[in-house]
Length: 291
Image (cartoon, rainbow, N blue to C red; front, side, top):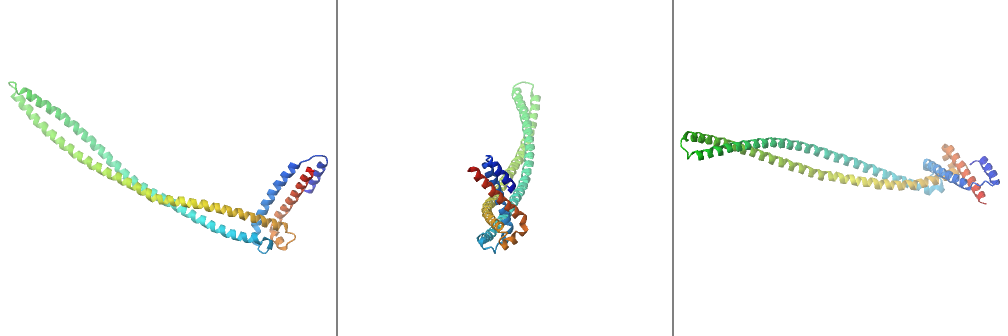
C-alpha cells in the first residue's frame, strides 16, 4: 500500500465501497513479511549491537544462546560420530560372522552330500544282501526238501556249495555295510559339531552385535534429544533477532550506531519502512470502513 493506492481507496470508500477484510488481510501478510525481514536483519547485525544499551538484554542473551548452541552442535557431531562408528562396528561384525558361518555351512553341506552318497551305497549293499539272503534261503530250503529223496546227493552237494558261497558273500556285504555305517556315523558327528559351531557363532554375533545396537540406539536418542534442544534455542534466538532487527531499523535515521549498522542493509531497511507505512495505511482504511 503506497500513498497513491491509499488515495484511491479513500475515494472508493467515499462512494460506499468498503473492503475492510481485504485491508486487514493485506496488513496481516505485510506484517508477516516485516517480521521475517526484522529477523533476517537482526541475525545479520546482532554482533554489532553490543554498544546499544536498549538492546543489551537481547545482545547478551544471544551471546549466551550462541555458546549453548555451539556446545549442542558439538554434542550432535559427537553423537553422530558415535552413531557412524557403531554402524561400522555392527556391519563389520555381521560381515565377519557371516563369512565364518558361510564357510562352516559350506563345509557342512559338503559333508552332508558325502553322507548322502554313503547312505545310497549302504542302501545298495543292503539291497544286495537281501537278494543274497533270499538265494540262501531258497538253496537251504531246497537242501532240506531233497534230503529225504533218493538220487539227490550231487544236487544237495551243489546246493550246499552255493550256501557256503552265499555265506561268504553275505559276510562280506555285512562287513562292508558296517564299515560304511561307521563312516556315516563319523560324518554325522562332524555335521553335528559344525552345526553347533554355527549356532555358537550366531550366538556370539547376537552378543557382539547387541552392544553395537545399544550404542546405535543411544546415539539416535542423543541426536534426537540434542536436535530438539537446538530447535528450542534457535526459536529463542529468532525472537531476539527480531527485536534487534526491529530496533535498529526503526532507529536507523536517529541513532548513529544504528545508522552505521544498517549502512550495508539500506535496501532491506527501506523495504521494512515501506511495509510499516503500508501496514499503517491498511489499518487506517480498515478502521474507516468500520465507521
